[in-house]
Length: 314
Image 1: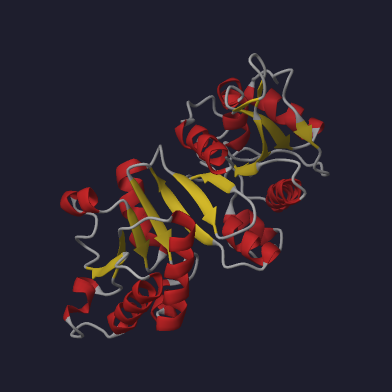
Image 2: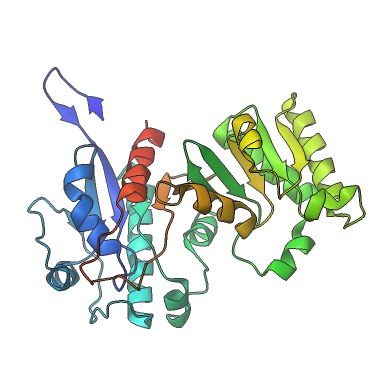
């Protein structure tokens, strides 16, 4: 928040991408509204009809100051269901939020969870939010997830595990490391190896040779020893290492997200780096198993994502 005068405070305007309406996103948005409006002025990317339908199913009141940015579309909300219509609508809600940020009508966007299978059924070829941002802006967007205690950046994201080793190339990793450093400006970043025991000096693979070259090249270009490693993956997140490192570069999706979600699931967020707009997100899925069942849902990740979006937009 920024003070304009002695009495008046202007709050940052954030676009909220509503996510898959068959999941828990709308419940989170409605239940957290009173809390997040203390920090920002949210604009929810959803139309009145679907908002009313969802609120009725949830038996929740729609706040009078619930500002909307209309997203065209009408379908029947089917709680906990993978569906083409809900997938298509969540995509349109996201792109609406991107356009608002691109036109400087909002300072940042916060995304609620989408369902990748629903996107697939809607013939949307992206695997997630980051891939959309990468294509939309023509930039190498970086997916970083975490909380104040630990952040993990993913060198590869939503690809099959068998394809990861082929992506381990010195030049590409070097660029990733430099882009990551230029965004986070941290002086001590751990880089994980790919293979068990970080290959034991080539006994279990040679991908670490590429990672070592990239680390050396990135540090040389920066002019100081920023990146450390490659760390042995199975001990990288030990209590001792977590005292030493807050930021980690991981070679593939689960290498970073299994430890992160085991340790800090409810409070972690997702941040897109290296793009022209600010985008943060919850670090959890649509929770179809509890959607619209009067279940208690955690608001921590969403509220943290809102706070971080405000912080980054300063």
